[in-house]
Amino acid sequence: MHIRAIIERLKVVHWMWWAVWLTSVALLGLVIAKHPSAEVRNLAESFRPEYLVMPVHIILHRGIAEAAGWTLFISIILAGIAVSRPREAHVVLPLAVGLAVLFFAFHTLFYSHMMTEWMRVTVRERTSTP
Image (cartoon, rainbow, N blue to C red; front, side):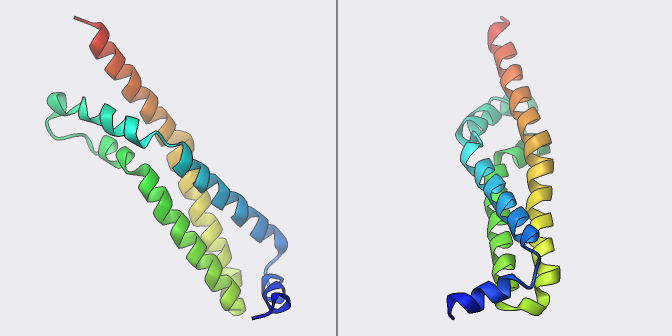
């Protein structure tokens, strides 16, 4: 397929959708790159003696970078479908944007940051008290 054909297929959807999609993909990449996965796994293990079975929110938090990777993968697949099938692009590209932005907004901005800080503070309090 020539570059002009690809550009024509991209023009089926307004350029702003593509800009928002690229931004959301960049944000997901940032989540994956900046998430302290190794630290969270170590912090989570310190909760095991107290809870025996770790709480669900800690288990979910441990896999947040992996979940972001799967969301990124699905978003890229949906964008590929939007390019290869221009008739479905009006539905598929907003779906890819929504999926990526919702994941980023909910898990990263709210849940991930707050849970990591809570885990750090709790572990510090445990080690500082006799």
